[in-house]
Length: 119
Image (cartoon, rainbow, N blue to C red; front, side, top):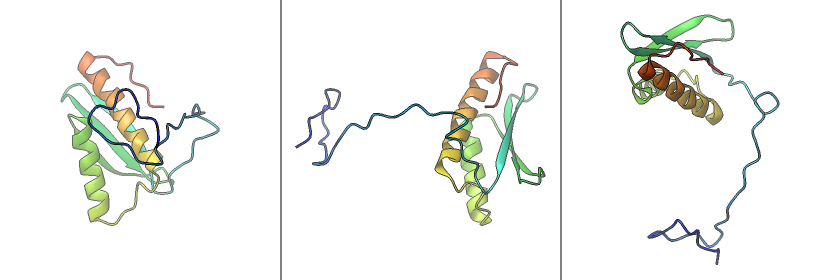
């Protein structure tokens, strides 16, 4: 039986439970483009919104999703993509990246900072 992590109080652990140490992610060597699309993120201070432009690889902006919170945007974007069978996000790393960038954008918007830079 695996050793129980100290922070686990009322949960059981699987027989094959293990702690997996993650290697550092190299932003250049480990990055893989998603076949479906790429995104551009913009802050709108006048309306206190975040915009996510979905682009194809011909660099055409297909749609822009705007909202006040990251979860409003990514839920709408993923629902729209699924409903219309667009397959924009085929790579889970791309979806995780979008969440990370939206959180950064939300913090900059809340702080009134123009220092948001999309990685």
